[in-house]
Length: 245
Image (cartoon, rainbow, N blue to C red):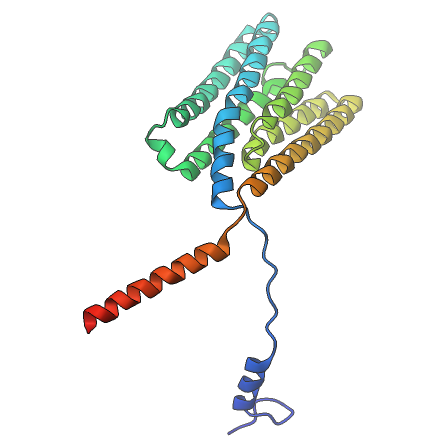
């Protein structure tokens, strides 16, 4: 047999060496259990009502205050915001009421997170859509500050699912920065960056606390599930052997 390497080892010898070589175990990320994920979805469905209420309250306030100066802009923005709020609130109520979608919690979580993406962009666009470039500085600053603070306050109530929290707070951090860049105010941009970093750190802390608590309450049982599935396979094999005999 032809040599397979420069040091004269045959293919069979290389295969034998490969079999005898110690296999390195791949580091696996410790994932939460299914029970912990299901409880996190339940927390998301319960806490999200408060987050939606925060966004609705700030949206009404901005529509009234800014609408005095720019009624057409405020009406268009409020209509867009109310439509996104209605869809999110309807999904939340359907899940809490035990509707058909409640039988698929992970599918509901994906649908709810996608709706929150639309809601986050609609809410965070207030500093751009509500106030034009030549608006009063105090009015523009008020819209940017309320949008930034409201987005991160609402994201805390969605922190049971990190993607849902990011869907709200990420646009809430980007749009005020865009508004500050449009106005050319470096101080406002620095303030918005610092506030966004502080809010992101707070959300990560809350998220870590919630995930840690759920992991302690619902630890993974991979070994037990493996033994149960192995016993079930052995039982099925025994039944098949008896039927064959």
